[in-house]
Every structure is written in structure tokens, then in C-alpha cells.
Image (tube, rainbow, N blue to C red):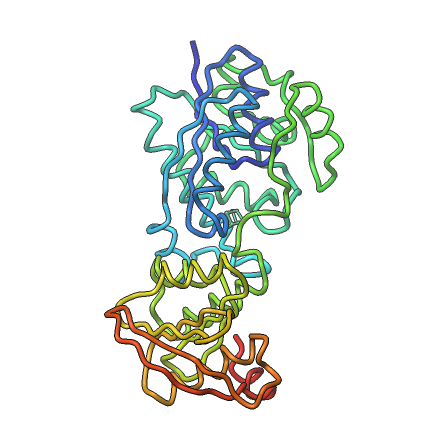
Length: 330
Ligand code: SF4
């Protein structure tokens, strides 16, 4: 029996591509490569990809490629999309991993849900060719949804896959995919726009700031996913929690050298200070804390701050004025 590895993102196209191949009696193993930008909540994301694949009857294995992805993000060979999304390099990375697994899993070829012309950066014809070449998969990368408008691959030429039962979908319309979803009974999938944080302009702004000032590592990326961010000097970032989840993230992401500030007598945001934790910067962090609390119109409010070592101190802070807040906002 022939076997294929299918890249599964949890979106509709990738689920359909796998099912189109399974329908031909070919065994398919789904693989999902996850990196830290896939979602704000990576564990939840993994669970949902599993649920989507499971409901589409596709067996799935998930692999984390966050560290390698961070290395390509700073200087992607094929550039960025509209935001900080290096889609072509990202796909080449995933497919390079998939290719490396082919021998161990005894797979004959690789399947993706790419659709010609669906996305401006990574799904133009030349981009698809660049991806195939970059992952060294010429002839072995089959895109079942657009296969009929692309060159035949080796599994098609050798009769492993019946080309006549593949598709000729192109462009951004989704009606053909929805028809196929109905045919296969696929109801659980991510929306095309959802997901990757690198396509989000606000997150991109924070990432660019981080990259400009150094310190691009998994911990720093985790911190960027929550809260309001401010740069109060070249080496110092302040993060203000917006809600309970942000406050928890601040507490769990805080490192030894960070300072945490909060209001002393009433509930309000947790604020993390990372970088230069001088007393003048702690005062600025406290002012930002007051400005984002119910006390923003008071003359001042009592705050407390502590370091990871547990040293706790009190201070009184006035809310920061709006122009100063805007000056520091990332
Ligand atoms: S949108 Fe994000 S996850 Fe998707 S290919 Fe681009 S960089 Fe990779």
C-alpha cells in the first residue's frame, strides 16, 4: 500500500488535501509542525489541531519547531509577507522536516493543502515552485486541491495517485472547498484568517521592537503574547496586564531579574518591568499601573513591587499622563 505524509495545519485546505488522497486508498499520516507564533495559547492550539484532524479521521503527530523557526525569523531568505510572516521560509522549514521523516515512516510522497493563487505571498505559482525546490522535494510534493493545474508529480506519473480524481481549485474563493468539506463531513477546522500571530499587525509591531533591541528568545516571545507593551528606554520593556489571563501570564513568565508591580489596596493590573530596573523605571512602571486601573483619575495610588527573589517594597505613584503613555507605547 502506498503511503503519504500530509502536512496538517488544522485549517480546511490541509484536512481536505489529506482526505482527497485517503479516498484513493492511500495510507496518510498527518504531521503538524507547531511553532510558538501559531497561537497565543500553544497547548490549546495543539489540542484543537488534534480535534480537527481526529474529526476528519486523519491520524496526526505534532512536532514543535519553535527554536528553529526563531532562527529563520530574523533574516528569512525569501522575505516577509504583509507583516512579519516569512511564509515561504516557514513552509520550506516544515517540508524539510517532513522530507526527513519520509524514510523512517516509509512514506512515498508528501501532501499539502496549498491552493494556487489563494495567498499572495506563498501560493503564487513561482512561490510554490520555490517552496518545492527549497525543501528539495521536486516530484514528491503533491498539492491535491490544485494538482490538475500544476505539473504532474512522480506519484501521479507512476500511477500511485489517480490524477483524474484530484482537483483544479485556484484563487481565493472557498466554495469548492466548502463543497468538499460537506462531501467528507468535515465540520471542525480553523478559519483561514485565524492563527499565526506573525500576520497580526499589533503583534508584528511588538516583535519588530523586540528584534530591534535584541533578546529574541522563546521566553521573550511568550511575554509578547499578552498585555499592553511599552518601551520606556532602549533596554527596558514594561508589560501591563489587561485581564486575569494577562496577569497570570506576567506572573508565570517573569524572570529572576524582572520586577512586578501592582496596586497595594485595590485590584488592578500586574505590571512587569524587564531590563533596567532602576528606581526611576520602577516608578514609571507603577505610574503605568495606576494609569490602567480604576485609579487613573486619582492624584496617586499606593502600589507595591517585588522581584522574583521576593523583596517587596511599597511606593506611591501618580498616573502617567496620556502623551507620555503614547510616547512609550509599542
Ligand atoms: S502564516 Fe505563519 S504559520 Fe503560516 S506559513 Fe506564514 S509564517 Fe508560517
